[in-house]
Amino acid sequence: MRIAHVITRMIVGGAQENTLLCCLDLIRQYGDDVLLVTGPALGPEGDLLSQGRAGEVPLALVPSMRRAIHPWRDAVCYRALRRVLSEFRPDVVHTHSAKGGFLGRMAAHALRVPAIVHTVHGAPFHPYQRWIARELFRRCEAYAARRCHAIVSVADAMTDLLVEAGVAPREKFTTVYSGMDVEPFLAADQHRDAVRRELGFAPEHIVVGKIARLFHLKGHEYLIQAARTVVAQCPQVRFLLVGDGILRQSLERQIAEAGLTPVFHFTGLVPPSRIPALLGAMDMLVHVSLREGLARALPQALIAGRPVVSYDVDGAREVVITGETGVLLPPLTVAPLAEALVQLAQDPELRRRLGEQGRGRFAEQFRHETMTRQLRELYQRLLDESAPNS
Image (cartoon, helix red, strand yellow):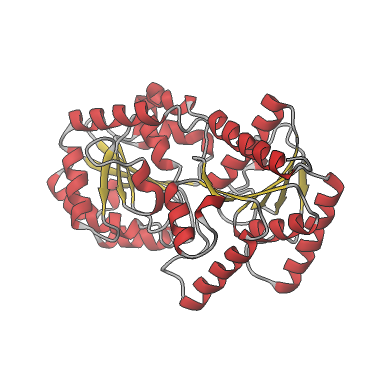
């Protein structure tokens, strides 16, 4: 097959890793001709491709493809995408992210590409936006959905959300969990002691980790509020915040005002290859984001054998199962969050059992090879359906 993947920017992030792994698998395992079309990797998250992980994936950079809405630049981007896709002549165009997804589907539809697929990594509209912005994005998604043949959700929750919002009928959706290289997570304990010493944690410390950009709607403030109660009852608990972003100074100020500076550690921006070792240094993962498709940190932690305490948002409930792999909590709550963290901090056997069950349930399901196989089967079905004699 000739397959073009279109994504707004290749920053260090889950959707981007998912896309890159898929491109590499399609080339290495199936011998497909693949083109990765992307805009500049702008933002504080870092450039995924600059880390040398693109390998043999051919790239087409479209400088005008940016996240922010800009009518003139978006028109330039649309024309550039049409030109790139027209020259590549793909059998399949697979789009990702809001801007790349919208303009990519428009361009592919105009060129009559036989199979057009879009992945929803996280809905672009959510309850925390102003009504007018939410409705604009919803209508854009519905318009673009009519110009593709299939929509892939990274969690069943994404399908439910978009169907209820009237974006597309349920039969247009397929759930394919976001794949990853699971082997480093299975081996996360190998360097546990060394990494903990490097981070300044003592053997007796119980480390609660959070992996997320320091950004709005990621919920760090709720963890800081809960930390007061947790540390009062379990003085040996420490908190490890993995990631960076525009809210770092604000969060450091909140932590200092709560008198918690000694128990919080910030790693700053880290490459994806560092995440397994950091998970190995943790004793549990906490996830308090208010919106997320299915955060990769959740299955990553479980595959590493770490239980997860998470708010019940979007796809979290599909991997965080109370009493089996972790604890699921109502969003925005602080007291239940503190209670769950204290319970796990005080019970090493419970942590071990939940982590082992998570590893057993999800290691195979989240392999990137599984994801790519399912996506390629979808591509083949769509091409078979579009064939003249089908």
